[in-house]
Image (cartoon, rainbow, N blue to C red; front, top):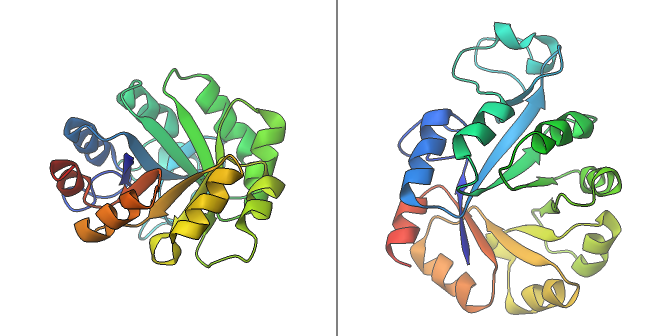
Length: 211
């Protein structure tokens, strides 16, 4: 089961920042999850919210006007340097091509996911070699159909809704189940026992120490 650092190491460093990602890598995580937006001048940057505190929306600013703590996706992929898979959540519609261009320029393995399942479908249609995923915060009646409709590989499910039948249905459809956001070691072990493929967590160091 993969241990995926949710936005880096948010208990030790500001989330979605290079120090946090470096800390997660030092722990030996399997993956790093992060969020991206595009600046007005077309630079893909890593941040969770539409705007940094005290600033206008990222999409309205040039990259050089952002606060220094916001890294570019290219800088993060260079820092990871192939030591983990980077799971890129696209927060802004219509920036798939920009994200794929950054990914294409890096040797670090990446996958793309989003709550907007159309993002996965568009990425798959443009670059089938980049794995995609769909985020879900409820229990769908037919999750396998939703996975297939998006052309996705990874089913990112809020962990409280995961049970063995869901895992089996996604696996039968050729997909993988990634649980988010799991910070309880007991819950992580229970999810591992029913076949979950990945755990996205704020406490990757704790979960790795108990593996």
